[in-house]
Length: 622
Ligand code: HEM
Image (cartoon, rainbow, N blue to C red; front, side, top):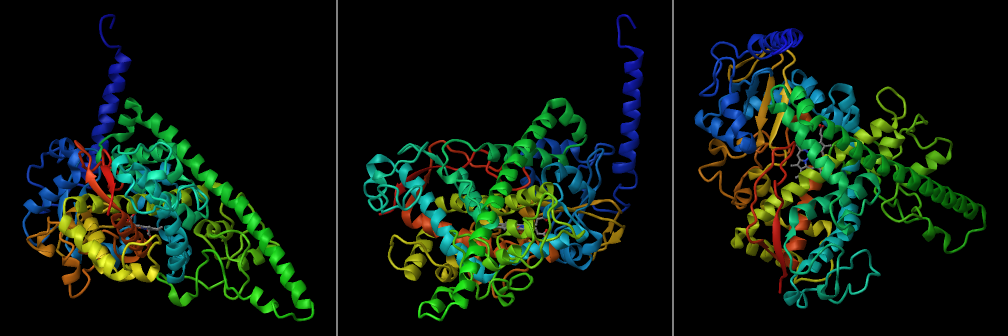
């Protein structure tokens, strides 16, 4: 003992090893072992499973999975793979099998405990990690902001303003030699900023150096966060006008990488404790949650201002009603609902509740604002919910205000923890996915001048020659080729490249595969969207035309980028609108070229970020 390891340490190590073997037996080799006759990956080893081949390929996981599935041959068979100490993965890819899991027997395949173990510390009880009633009521509530009427407002009032800032920032990055020729870019920081009408040569943006390469991926994140914060939370984090890195973004991106890696890392709890990732994750989560808490308190302050304004407007209207009629009275009160409250139920895209803002006076606060009708309800007595206050059903406005005002499934107002969960889940939904889809599409376009030329020709035909303003909702809807470009980028680079469910009970899939209870059902949008069985021999090629050639839109079980079944993406329409809007707006104003030496690759995370960003040089389009 004097020269060696203490016996207690040996005993502890032996106990740990025994526990590990027992755990392994239970989870990977015992009840979750692939059933006899299951199709397993070539090269699977006893005990170690697929770890020796998968772990060295983690940095290129999506491609590795695609290669494995392709090697199994046509017909898209289900196969299984295993990692020590982890549940068996049942990897499915045939559309009929996906439909069985995501729709027909969706009740047997929830997100389940693995999702909550891995993502719970970051996403709490938000929509992405919930099942059952907890999920259902969040989805129902959130679907209210996705109406055609709201989309028109988002395009005209949010996309336009944020695109102005984005183009101003890009204009500032044009090289000094070319900047003077650039078309007029909108003002940085608002209409009163100097030089707005006089071309990008006059514009300077803090932290943007004229002529220096710029990370377009980072800019897309800033754009989508500012845009979605305005739409979803009625606030403006101002990322587009901030110089330097944004601490929330750094922490959020890193936390997603760490939590996602848990799906693929045997013994992640131990590893995270040993290598410091666990400590850093806790610090990142503190940064992230305090950012979301800031959004909530800002929204609460705005709500009280809006409520006061609406109450004043109401009092004024009542005073006017009591007064003898005057010619101006009716026009003052007939402007309809303002802000981003949802429209009539008839234009709903995902069900929803009653329209609440019809025929009410416009709120005095600048858009986006809640519907005055909702404020009117509050003025009758309810407080601003959250922190244990009363909740009030029926109020309709932006997403965060909705969640603040409505009751949770238990009938009580949501506490701040739950509101923070909501904000973070919707930031992933509204920021990361769309920013990544845009970045990958722009990356593909840079390599394909023919695609760029067609996109520009279509835009010119539909919108006319380049002008200062931004496209409208109806104009964006006409741009079929631009939409095809965006979808094709997304097909090859799906923003949620891998996804999983857990099997509650044993089941037999439509192709005869027996699924053990507790197995993880894995589906790779990256691999499925590239399957030659469904996309043809040119599946790996970026060819937007395929979207115009289809007689019928491909089923969501073949193009799975937006998921499918009852948990299909709620924001698909919004994402497509935003994607087309940004592609057209940017490409009509600027030329992008890959910066010398820039490398583009994906990083392994919950979504599909670019590992080193998308570094480009910018010049004005003449
Ligand atoms: C290109 C952009 C987008 C892509 C590729 C995308 C893709 C997806 C995918 C694959 C899922 C399923 C995720 C899962 O199973 O956990 C999903 C869910 C969801 N998406 Fe999107 N999304 C995009 C944009 C948006 C936007 C802009 C919003 C707006 C808020 C949004 C809102 C949601 C919501 C709320 C869910 C959860 C649905 C549920 O679980 O019921 N998405 N999205």
